[in-house]
Amino acid sequence: MRTTLTDISSLSWEHPADRAALNALRAIPGFQQVVNKVAGVFGERGIRHLFTANAVRVGPTQRPDLDALWTEVLQVMDWPTRPQLYVTQTPEMNAGAVGFADPFVVINSAVLEHLSRDEVRVLLAHELGHIMSGHVTYRTIAKIIFYVGLGNLPFLAGVALLPFQLALLEWYRKSELSCDRAALLGVQDPDLVLTTFMKLAGGREFGDRLDLAAFKEQAKEYETDSSAWDAVLKALNTALQEHPFFTVRAGELQRWVESVAYARIVAGDYKRRADVKPGEGLGDDMKEASTYYQERAKEAASKVTDSFSRARNAFTDAFKGGSR
Image (cartoon, rainbow, N blue to C red; front, side):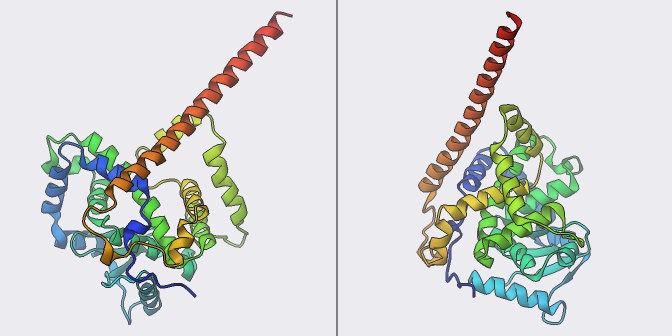
């Protein structure tokens, strides 16, 4: 039985790196200009045509089981409005929350083919998290840029787009970490979320067997068993990616669960929307974000130091061996 999170505020689950990356994005000269231009050209109506013209709207008579599942997710997260839900015929397992003032969710048909009902619940709760966190406008701008391409948006001529694109992608990835937490709160089963990540990364069983414990170990290896050069390669690999690697997302979510923050929220200790004032928590967000990035910097510095130490020792050993 899942606990209904009455009046829960998104501040309860948002990842500090999400807000830090968003603040960095907003500080880029011309950022708001790009947002205004893209939103002005496409508009609410244009966005709906772009993302739903080749999709089927879910309702009581159209995929009623999926419609009922969406209702359950909305009830657990106590979200008062009901965003429209669509299914589009696409072979890639994915979903997205899109729109400006009136956001909606599009889920790819491959999700329904390859994931269980509860694993689909994970994706729906994740997308609802984006809506509740107010991510949708900027993510919609990002999706337009990803799908249409910067070169095909002539009205952005003259804008320095590469810094904007890199910063947008950095925030886009970090916003995923926030909504992985929302997904967990929506399903209230950490292993279910991690199993969903595993299938999104490598597909379903196809008559074979999947091992969640092995995937958890793989996630730890990716984060801890690396040299300084590995860290550089990881940064380069992710710079132009829309999503963090699922092993990274699994590790981040496991740390959040281990921090007992998740347990406190399910027990009823969380920020409520009615109590949140405009701008509240911004100082704490920046402090947490600073701590988060400082820890990552320390980890990177430690890897660099370790790499130099090993190189020095190898050189010393080789020199000793050559002098015998």
